[in-house]
Image (cartoon, rainbow, N blue to C red):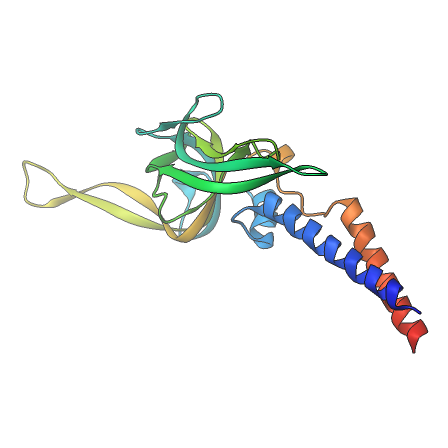
Length: 222
């Protein structure tokens, strides 16, 4: 008698899980929940004052080699294009991924106190996205040159040593800062584009309804 109720609860719960998964994939990208909170709450450390440990650095992207974006034709130090085939269905359009093109070049993040070198092969880049609607055949993920970004991760202070051409002894010219591990570089430097960690109200309602119906059905069936 209560099988349809339980089945409905399962369907509602599954829909909620799918909706929540899509929401957090869009919001978080390559970052974790913890990093999303740190991105929002950690104080900013100037590059010139950073020492060894976890830091949040905010600065401007400087790149000597760039690629032109598909949308708006702006220079980018990191660019990923997802090519889709779009088919029209009974309810809405569906996209099928055909191929992915990637370009990335070393760049710097600089503020008023210094520069931090970024190797794109050793960092996780949270790109700005465009063309994500179901009718779009190209979805672009980009990190623009000149853009204000956040670097979140562990750093280590080292001494850059060079040899003076007229001397045999090495000369300590400046202190350097290097990244450690797999830090995050995100375009979300402003509060209005920070990841939204609270799920959509519709998903929360579906989750609650599914849980209540499932519990009620199980109880009444006993």
